[in-house]
Length: 202
Ligand SMILES: Nc1ncnc2c1ncn2[C@@H]1O[C@H](COP(=O)(O)OP(=O)(O)OP(=O)(O)O)[C@@H](O)[C@H]1O
Ligand SMILES: [Mg+2]
Image 1 (tube, rainbow, N blue to C red):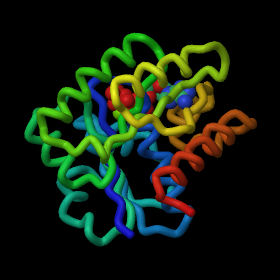
Image 2 (image 1 turned 90 degrees about the vertical axis):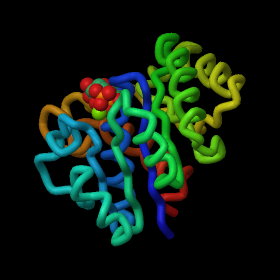
Image 3 (image 1 turned 135 degrees about the horizontal axis):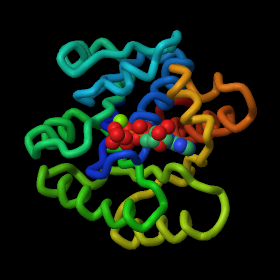
């Protein structure tokens, strides 16, 4: 088993780093040798984690050469990458994961992301959309899903719920399930289901 998941989006602030960290946590907890590559020039993933985690965390320069030593590699890609980097990532990746917030700006922004992937020659079969920051009320998520699917995208069945515990986790430098209270654990369960759907865990 060898998974390389590139988490990408053209739009910023849609949950790339949060998703990369928590998918890596599930893969690592399941016993897979897991590497998270922080592709952000400002190294937000590396900056977030200031506690013990069940995966290795490296920047691009250190991580890319040692990818083959791992069962699961998750790449937290920076927004606004040049086409050659998108192409290279798309070739490395077994799955390209596109987080998307269920709101108009983000859903519309996906068209630009898809165009970027298309221009870089990335196989659409590899691409999955992950809806994040889902309020678990109202129709926005269902509408976003319908619009994205209508545009031919594959949207994962589980949406990650919105919870302030995610912010607490980043401030505290920890993973969301370690934030006191139930909300963070529920976000972590959402990521568990997504990890299953992506075939990272059983
Ligand atoms: N499920 C969630 N519920 C509530 N807040 C969230 C959730 N996921 C992410 N956030 C918050 O939204 C903000 C953006 O998340 P994150 O940093 O993961 O996005 P990003 O796509 O990596 O952003 P950037 O483009 O800046 O790298 C952060 O403040 C984070 O704490
Ligand atoms: Mg980020």
